[in-house]
Length: 72
Image (cartoon, rainbow, N blue to C red; front, side):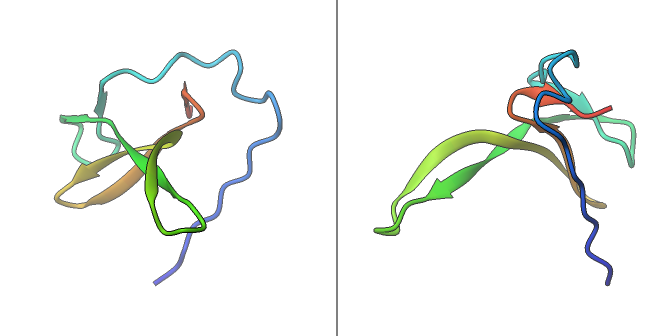
């Protein structure tokens, strides 16, 4: 299995649209709810984070946005 990498420069996504609540899956082209990751604090507690946005599909998990902005 290959792990993909992505690099985004500071301010590079500033002009991209905001992330919607639902997103057309790049794999199956159906709408899926956008989900977000969590921060894990030093004490092990988890707090919500909107840094990475993704959609889950039967065919995988796909990154769709960073820090509130859509990837194009």
